[in-house]
Length: 216
Length: 216
Image 1: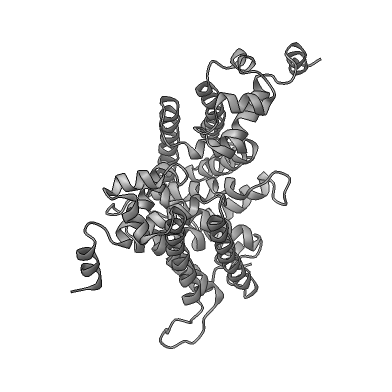
Image 2 (image 1 turned 180 degrees about the vertical axis):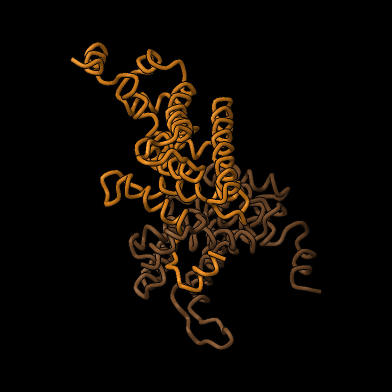
C-alpha cells in the first residue's frame, strides 16, 4: 500500500495534495481574496476543521501552491547550469543554457498549469505573496544574467537590452497559461519547440540579402 | 478656449474623459467588481449623481474604456491593409503588413496603457465583457489570417501553426503591460523595434552552418 492510499483510507475523500488541487482551481476561478475557507469546505464537501487538519490557514495553501510553481522554475535554472553531455563536444555556451531554461520553463508551465497561473496573478497583497514575488524577481535576474552572458559570448544579438529580452521571452511563455488546455493539439515538447523557434531563430524566412547582412 | 477647457468650466473638476481616466485606474488597481460607483465618487471627489450626469452606469464606463483599446487595435489591422508607399516598389507582402500590425499594436498598448490593461483582464462576466471578448477574438482571427497568408507567400516559416504564432507574438506584446511604465528608458518605437527583432528575426546570431541550413 502506498503512503497516498493509506492517507486516503485514514481520512476519506482528500489528502493534502487533493485539497491543494481543488483550492488552487478555486483561487484561479474566483480569485484568492474572494475564496473563503467556507467556500473551499463546501467545494470539497468537507468541514472547515477537516481542512485545518491539513493546512493551518488559507495563506498556507497559497504558499504551498506558489512554492510548487517557483520550485519548478528554480530547478530549471539550476539544472541548466550543468552542461549537457553531448557526444564529441564539451562546449556549453550560455545560449545553449538559455535554450534549456526556456524549454524547461514551458514544461513547468504545462505540467504545473494551475500553480503557475496562480503565481502569475500574484500582486503582493500579503507577506506570502511578497515572498513569492521576491523569488520570481530572483528567477528573472538569473535569466537576464544568462541572456547578458550569451550576448557577451556573441551567440545572441546584443542590440536589445538583456532585461527586455528576458521579459519579452517570458511574456511569450507565460501567455501560454491564457489559452493552453491539457489534452489539446499541442503538447509541452511541441510548444517548447515553437517558443524556441520564434525567440531564437525568428519567424522570417531568410532572403539572400538578409543572410549577407547578418553575416556582415 | 479649447472644447476641453469649456467643458471643465461648465462642470468643474472632471469632464467625461477625466472621469473615465480615474475610473479605469481604479478598475485596474482594485478590480472592476470591487470598485463601486460609491468608491469612484469618493476617489473623484464628486457626488454619484455628478458621475451619472456623464455615464448611465458603471457598465457604460467599462464599455467606453474597452472600446478605446479595441478601436485602437482594430484601426491598426485596418490601416495595415493599405500598402505603404515605398519608393521604387509597389509590392506589399503579408509579412510587411504583419510587421505593421505588430508595431502598431505596441504603440496602441503604450499610448492606451490603462485601457489595454483593463481589456486584457476581462473574463466575460457581463454582457459588455462578452462583447469585448468577441471583438478581441475577431482581431485575433484577422492577425492569424495574416500570419497564414505570410506563410503561404513563403515569407514566414510555415512549420508553426498560424494561430500559435499569433498567440505567442501577442503574448509577448501584451506582457508589456506588466512592466512598462511611461517615461522609463524604453519608448514605443524602441519597444516595437525590439518585438519585431525578436519575433521576425530571432535572438540567435547566425552561424554559417545555420545560414546554409536556412537557405537549404
